Image (cartoon, rainbow, N blue to C red; front, side, top):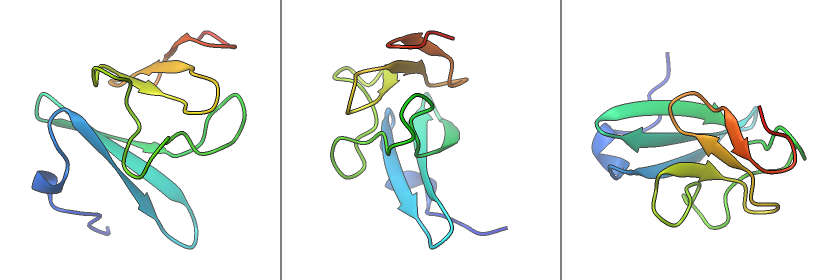
Length: 86
């Protein structure tokens, strides 16, 4: 198991991206919980972040795709708005 960062390096609420030669990931911290996802929009296959370490919408309540605005629930990745709900 590899450590990506110390928990205090991710704001609560907030997000942080990680890249390796094999993959691009991001973590979201919300109410003390950490959620880890691949940094890839399921609709377009592109990275989600709009700026470095910025994966959340304006009020830090949902994950947002920077390209087409799809929104995903932080706790489970479920798409709630955008081109393909579900």
